[in-house]
Image (cartoon, rainbow, N blue to C red; front, side):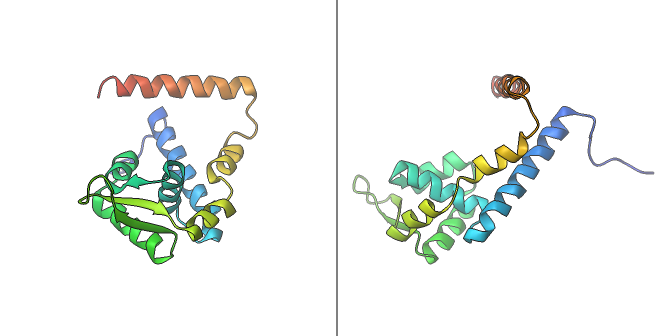
Length: 146
């Protein structure tokens, strides 16, 4: 008996497949810079925030603390990120980019811009707007049920 493991006829399957392909392409774009997508996400979020607690970052990225610790350890070993005690709460660890980390971020093009340009190639502005509206509605529909 041949049991299907996926449902290619369902929109939710296509959305999941698109998510997986976007993640793969982001990794492809970042590989020449010595980064994986999750590492870039950490650097990018800390870069935008200036200083960010490890807990805030963990919640924003929706990853397990141990997973985030491994990513931060790898970035710290490369000299791109630093952990320090929070001035407000000595029990809390905060993250900030080192000078080398800021230089690294400045040298990397936005991978999302590159991948999205490839992803929407061939879509008219009207079709792109329709996709954005539809995705926004679907996200809202599922968030309201959470």
